[in-house]
Amino acid sequence: MSKYVVFLLGVIVGAAFLGAVVWFSGPDLMLSERPSRVGLDATVDRLTKAAKAEGWVVSGVQKLDQSIRKHGGPAVRPVRLVNLCHPQHAGKILAEDGARIVSVMMPCTIAVYEKSDGTVWAASMNAKLLGKMFGGVVAEVMAGPVAESQEKFLETLD
Image 1 (cartoon, rainbow, N blue to C red):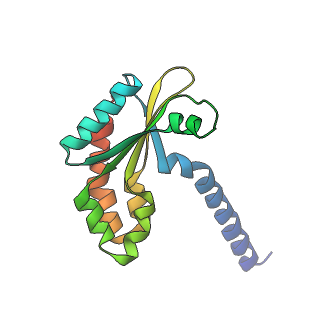
Image 2: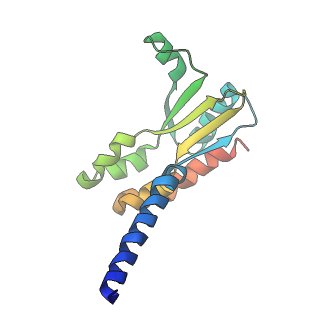
């Protein structure tokens, strides 16, 4: 077998392996969850207080489970979406036309939910990784102050 064929097979096998790694580990890298030591309402309260203390605006807390039920969906365990915005961070990103695409992920949201065993968990996107994926001003803001603040909010649950 020629060196070129071996090299090409190596590239193909390596790319397939890398693709599989990304496919299977991607969700674990992009999203994280952590348990809360307190109940659902207390968890939401801790997160909102921590966010406000860091200069964030809590634009709302949606009761997703109740909305689903209200609109004809099935009964599900409690889920709260804590919508957070930091006007300076958001403004810096939205000031650039090329970065506005990330507005689809604004406001920043932390989900608080109850699992079937009764434990309460908080989930969030990995702002640091997300920022690095986009680069530019998005990386500057998301991978820096947003990721740092997000970690402070979530530490209140430990």
